[in-house]
Length: 481
Ligand SMILES: *Cc1c(COP(=O)(O)O)cnc(C)c1O
Image (tube, rainbow, N blue to C red):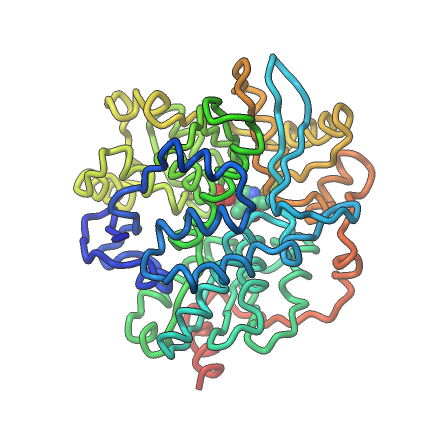
């Protein structure tokens, strides 16, 4: 399997080459030269595989430069019940991503695919835990070390830290916006005492932290001298790891492969739903891919109008589903490349427009007009009021407490139900992570897994810095000297 860039650079990299890097040299994102096509017989054979077996079957198509005998143990130690077992109510989870029926509406079944039983109680663990093991494997092979520099609004950072804590050859420098994360998210990250995890809080919003990461990464000399790497959501390995649970969710929601399923995905950076798009391109019978956004509706606007208009930091709302508070969707270019018939020149021209004027407009083009016919995409946006209302409704009707991001998904999913096509909403976090919202909606607390009962009381390790790339560089320098 060779990888190409969405902007035309064709170095034909292999999986392990792009694993440790970020953007392609031409500023584009890596994608496989072609998506592997899953035959009917393969799909039938996959139906009864366990999660790690299925993950191995799918990933080995994309990581052809890792020997099967080496990939298999990496995958099975990642997708183990011991890692993904922070279940509510103490039940033991064997199948990693259990599907729970919510109920029947309009002649169809809506279910939740639980992706949040990993160590940080959010779906990012699904990919990040694999990434941690892949990093360790490749760094060891290449006798290399790596300093991960990242920015987080909460979930990505903690997922990266829990995936890389204690791993040989890797340090993590994670920037977070000071005072902008929930108490739980903050405690999750800052309570880690591992030497190789360095938390840095910045005065500003997420985008300020992100800009510092960009500034440091754009200093190519510094980047090379200090082996700076990233684990942000454009990392290809993260996207491809997420493809697996669309297959798993499809099998769990159907009894045979002639059926179709729709997925609703609470979205921010378009990483999660991009994996759904890839699963569909591989031949998984997906009917609709429903993109659900919060008040930061960049993506909903695009799928409704054909205008992709990024926001400034100032126009990015701080919402009660904070992990979806984005101003631009960093993985979106992967889909746009496919939408434009994999034409790198067209893709580059569109994203040059975004860089220059802040938006592109493809309304009225055949590509846009056929977007849902060809790719299944539709969308909707939620809001604080709808979020709380949905949490209340789901609790009242189905006796389940869902987190605010999942609530945005459920709210939007209701608008896109089709007769006899199961709707699977991706459950992206456990409610306990956002208990203040649950309290506001229901007046009761969400249940926490035992391991997290007193997390806010544990000692915290964090370094406060000004919104200043230079200060961050100095800190990295000191640590890696
Ligand atoms: C990251 C995150 C999202 C958004 O996922 P993207 O891949 O950025 O679209 C949604 N919900 C939760 C809980 C998250 O952590």
